[in-house]
Length: 513
Image (cartoon, rainbow, N blue to C red; front, top):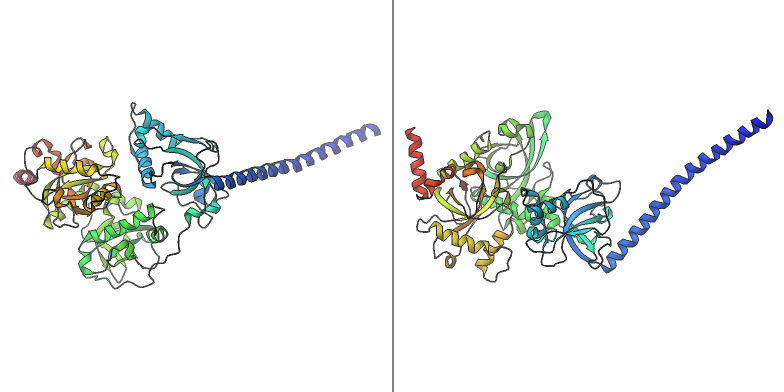
């Protein structure tokens, strides 16, 4: 009996010691593995920093912990290129084409690229990079790559800027296919810049003015949204919407380009909270006009019905004419917006006509690729048009071909350089137009301009090529409204008549009905 008891005691003791040993050993092994991997990762990082080349990648997607700020480092899927002629804007354009283009059965290269930049369940693979097809990149050498992101490299060391649309400074050893590709700290460094510490002049609240909405923050308890807007202070500039729109577009371009000399300041101003103090837009963005960014409020009930549930200003109203109640700090639209997108577009056409706008034919130079395929999204485009009836549609097509051929090319001729920059930087800008130089337009008035295309106003809802679009254009050489008209749906008659004749006939028919 005693012997049996001792044996049982020894077994329990041995089992207890074994359990304790396992409990102590497992954490030790895990810690050893983590230390080994961290040491290996640090060694790989030091090596690629020593022998690799600095470049900038365009991020497609990244792990959640990078956006939420931890608990550790993570990885991103990004586009990179060893060709110094391929700029970050090219990579962003390629990624946008991949994500926005509808994919059919015949689009094998596009489908491959889409799966490469948006994989599901694919683990991180150190050194992974796969070249995209030339048909997708336009013949440029561009890779999809796994980039390891060290949060200590990111300014602040707490959070990656965004899940997508991020220019990521990184280090790559192009001669070794399986070596670590990772973020680098020096690429984020920017000199400290501060907005001018001054208070805005009092706006002339007795008259309407144009604003550009930047930040929106819902306040459900009072059914309001707090907004941060930009506006021109001088009364004369307030009557020209293009002044504030072009200034804030310059701000947006700097935000999108990490290499911009004022990128840090632009991010601070463009992404400021609605309740932040007023700030004057520096001359680097405002081109000499006095533009201020400040906070205000809008009642949810004043928004169009199709966006009240979203508690947001709809994209087609991001630039609007408003009044400011100085006592309450509330903005109200000078014209109550229609409750649907197409209704608001019809309102804009009528406003342009009241402002002296005339019907014109515009010829397409370029447009968002999705507009050439069936879909529901409305997108921007670039067109050329002329208020001069002597300029034929065929001549506009020739000018459109000339401008399209300049895209992405450096030009010594300042007139050609202006057109090249216009079509190369694709950040859309309502109310923007530039006159095409006389020696390119036979001395006639011809303008290049931005035009937002609404599918419901197109025959079949899609574009096909150098389409001819019927628009109404406000007068002015620098800026003014250019709006797509519903009369485009009568395309066969359009081909046989001038723009003015077409609009006159349709309106006469409507009055008879």
